[in-house]
Image (cartoon, rainbow, N blue to C red; front, side, top):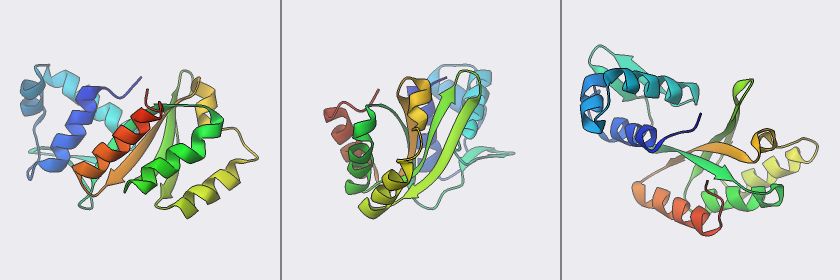
Length: 165
């Protein structure tokens, strides 16, 4: 299971809209059934996005920041560079997770805000195997940014380096 463009757009909509968005309204917006939206919301919740279901629809319980999920693939030697690229461009790395074909979602909370955090994480990883190695290098990061411009810089930088899947 992968995060689809539609699911990332759902995250964006739920963050930007002032009021909860109904499943039916989201379904109409994307030209899919309400049941597809319910499934998308379930997937996003499984990946750790804090979506709240209200009697008026869905909303994200956030802190005034934007949340995105990036799908990534790279070599072990590139872990430090990938993480530094995110924090250098204004991102906070909330977690890393994979979707294992047998065990499902395996996630590690990171909460990395700086190069010092990256250094500490990489240092602690020396005696273990990165999660990404369980899924042929494919892994995901939930990141938080202050604004869309920061996210665009992060995404562009990671794409230039060939890290995004």
